[in-house]
Image: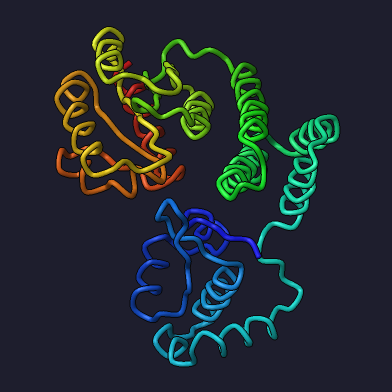
Amino acid sequence: MNTHRIHRVAKLTGLSKDVIRVWERRFALLKPTRGANRYRNYSDEDVALLRFLKEQLDAGGSIGELAKLGREELLGRARASAPQISFVDNTFTRLLRELLSTLNPFDRVIFEKRLNGAVAVVPFEEALHGILLPLQEQVGQLWHENHIDVAIEHYVTKQIQQKIFSAMNQLPVAEFGAKVVVACPPGEEHDIAALTVAYRCRVRGCRVYYLGANVPVASLANLCGKVEPDLTIISFPLALSDDKATELVHALAHEVIPVSHLAVGGHGALAMRDFFLKYNITVLEDFTELDHRLDRLMRQTVSRG
C-alpha cells in the first residue's frame, strides 16, 4: 500500500490541508502513521475515504452525520460506490513501480530508458510532480529502510537533478522579472526541492539565483546584500533539532532579513513552523502557495516597472 504526505493527499482529494487536519483531529476517521522524520503518512485507504467524503459533501451530505458511521463503514461504502477507482494516478503509479523495480537488482540501462521515456511523454511540470519528486521520495525511503545502497540513492538523485536542470535550461533567461534567491540551509545536502522551487520561479519569469545545497548564512546574506532580491527562499527538506533550529533561525533573522524578504518551505520548515513565526518569517505551505507568492511578486515588479 502506498503512503502519501499531506500535500499529496490534498491534491489527490481536492480538500485543503487545513480541512484534512481538522477532520483527522475532530472525527478520528483517518489513521496516518508517522515516519522516522515525524511527518504524517496517509494510506491509500485514507485517500479513498477522503475522496468519498468530499463526494458526499458535494452532493449535500453533512460531515458530522457521515462521521457517525465510522471509518470502516465509510470505507465499505467508498469501495461499493466506486470499485473501479484507483486511489493514485494509475499511469504515474505504474511508471514509478517500473522505475523502482530496476534498482534492486540495479539495471542502469533499463532505468534510464524508462525514466527518459516517462519524462518525454507528458508536460514537464506533470512529470516533475507526478514522477520525479515521488521517485525521489520513494528512493529516499528505500535507502532509509536499507533496501538499496546509498550509492544507488545518489545515482537516482543525480538523474532527477539532470532532468530538472535540463528543463530549466530550455527556459528563457529573464532580464526584468522579480529577483529570487533560492538556497538550502547550512548542512543540508538534499536540494531537489530547492531546485524544483528554482524551476517554478524560472517558469514564472523570475530572475533566479539558484545557490543549491549547504549555503552558509553569512554567504547567503552577502549575496542578498549585493543583488537585492525581492525574495529569498530557503528549502528545508528535513527538520533540525530544537537547538540547531533556534541557532539557525536566529542567524537568518539577524543576517538575511535585513537585506531580503525571507520565506521558507519544505517538510522540515513545516515541522519547525513555530521557530520561523517567532521572527515573522513566512512559511510556505506547499507549491501552490509558492506560486501565489511568485505571481504577486511578478505583478508588483511589473507595476514598479
